[in-house]
Length: 590
Ligand code: ATP
Ligand code: MG
Ligand code: MG
Image (cartoon, rainbow, N blue to C red; front, top):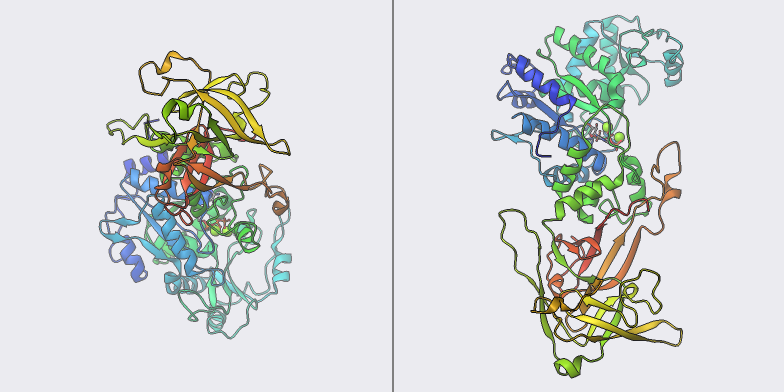
């Protein structure tokens, strides 16, 4: 750590900067639309990346990898990263998703401003240019309107072993094609009646180059352009144009798009020849997508979990969405750290969920204030308290809020709480008959109440069913933590506790993995059947008084138990609600 992450993309960029690949670019006066001019208008020597989500759902941890990568590269090489809504599909896109994406990127710690320019774009603002580009391709003989049925088209496409065969519409003249394309645009043809296709090579070994469709008819209202269009560009056509218009230098995408790269280059070569875009063209680079165990990272599947009520919403703390991780208690720093650690490669792999938790622990260890909680309380009565301390006496205690603050930071004020005759302890910190090696409370054994006294267990009370209702112990005099001689009595264990007098009842949500299978959506598995029925357990716990004053979203380390956050939505001072982010140690897979 401390050194910059090293990956193949950094090598590419460093080489481009050294060679001055983008230093000679003509930015001003380039063709295209207003949005294009704006995007290009700044320092040409810089690199430009983009994060191009489709606003059809909430972002997930896989997107976080792409965000950290693209915005991180721009930051580290004094470049610019654009946030671009890839909104070329009219039916699935909504403002709610646009807003949530803006929030998620900002929360992760990135922004799209550079030199006072806001680099936030909508692909749909380029529809006019895309239409002109399509007309240019038709005129130059590089595209034609195909009116075969989808079945005929599929049949003539061939497959991996068989070359395709030409459509009967392939040889129409440019003029005929132009007229037909305008018919499409004017709404004279119904959905599916025709598509515009690139004219490349039906025998090409790469199926993506067998005359791919570039425009289709869709009589649908678009969230940005309304009813202006009834034809929409295909992603493979739109994306390279978006990159070129925004003067993107390095267009970074996941490996599934590797086979599309030849078309990306083919299209931009044609448009450059036609003077529609400038050199140097953007180039596409691919990296391996994030696959994280025990989660699904497909917006479609995540939407299904929400729509079918398997989780409480997109921001359910069990969801791998960015809003879900945020509500669970993950910090932007921990997600950035995670993305740095997993690195960027071209190799298909699975990352263990514990890597995400590890990053959270490492981030919070020196930040999160400590606190004590009792999750499964049983009452401990100190039977000699009144005699020793005076009836009703409450003895003030303190413990550090942060035992090891980050370097250069002052130690925060200590936590204050009291001990009295009755305290809450964890049920499993007492055993009437101790199992082998048990060091906590059992009759005759001594332990320290953390930050309080050494006590000696004397027994317990039970109800008619045999359940333990009270544990009894006596205080060993002169053993209060922090007083001289406190350590003269040696014990093998210290247990956490909360005073009955000043402890505050809290709702604590104990989250576990959402799925029981490490790869719930691999190989055609029914991921719904693999949901973990125990992924949420809610307990009524007691917390020490300082925690009742927690602010929503404040994170804590509950001693011996784990990292917790005051729920952003439901926590109220005096009515605390805490989410478990993760346990203290890696218990994943055990
Ligand atoms: P989904 O399949 O979940 O809908 P998507 O790739 O269709 O994801 P987009 O909105 O197109 O969603 O994604 C925006 C960017 O995020 C893309 O550039 C894509 O490469 C990247 N991305 C999506 N999922 C992952 C992932 N699991 N790992 C890394 N990058 C990802
Ligand atoms: Mg996509
Ligand atoms: Mg998708």
